[in-house]
Length: 118
Image (tube, rainbow, N blue to C red):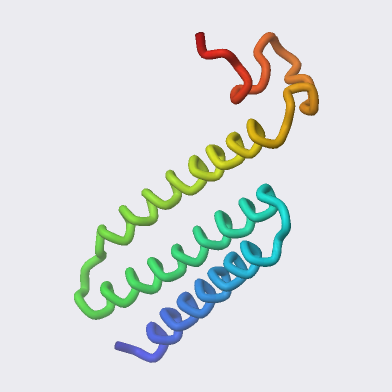
């Protein structure tokens, strides 16, 4: 493997480690649930993405073919992280806010967590 590929792989791993550290630090140091929600979801996605990119480059350089596993993991992560963050935010809204605390939605429907499903 060439020095340039090793340098690119190391750079991707260092960047992903920095993002992982920032996300973990934000989770520990931020005070409210909504603040804690933002830091790890963004940073973890970028951190894991950097590790997956480094893995894809490494296995392409050593085996000569692209690994589909990393692409599937990236797709799964990009699909599930925002959905999980949305669910956590809705639970926070229901447990900490009253419907009167929220602004008007501007249409016939209110905020989704407070709507009666029946």
